[in-house]
Image (cartoon, rainbow, N blue to C red; front, side):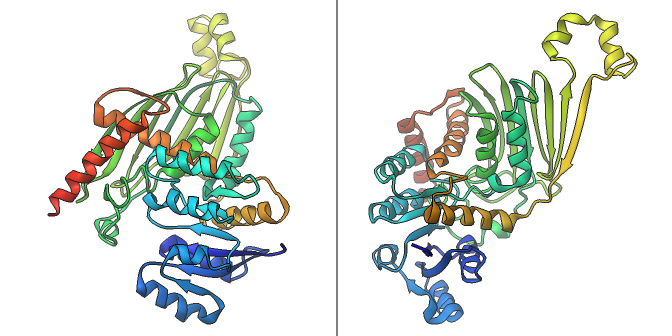
Length: 385
């Protein structure tokens, strides 16, 4: 194979972007040969846009069975991601799934089990932030042990401002039955993935969520979570969609320094000249104050700063390039599909903690989570009767 034939399932906002990048030749070694959408207007748009160059289907199984594609890119509402991915894998197709991997962890486990049956196929997630040079460099700094062992991580990401018209733009959006949640399953999966990619998976979670906070929706749009790691490190995660000014600040604190990331573009690395444990036992109160205030004749830490402009479009393109190269020449996947469950596990834990009013352990009880989710789906549906 010297060219990967892509079929895009779902040509809404993201599916259209992926399709255009493929059609415009921005993914070397890849071509768009088919698209699918249940919306007749979107199908007609595709026919008008690309003519006979791209086959258009209303049923995704017809696209998968058409013989026109080598890889399926799934960009549909979240509940359908695992179902369609499994269908593609069973047909011997490579699969790329838009975030999140799904709504609840149990369905994603089924997807991962199917993927394991087909090691010859490439299965990937569209975690575009993993291609951001800034986060790639931060990951290297952490893996090199520059700031030592993790002690605390905190991320305030409230720059996901969304107005009511955004939520009203589609009937499935911001619903338990259609989307499976709000900010945690729509905007924040990127940060939840980066959180575990950089710092590992937490083992305990306690969260407090607000539903329809300043918005006419039934799902969460305001989240404050506390979590713990196996080594005793702690963390916090705060997000919302009703802050017009917004903040994006991530701090990763180790026993030998700290990394501060603002606006996903600027990084400051502060490395202690001596580990905190050593300073803790060496310094009395006056020595500590003198060192902190810069009056001790020596520096407490060395500092390095760098910036990387955030290029949202190129990040997505780079994931598609990596996926295509993985198919054509065995390049290692930046975001393996099997890792998609991790961000969903974290989100599920936040939901379950708030719903049950208690700290929960990870991985979450999948049966318990699903039952609690269905209560909210049923309540939402009954309110519309």
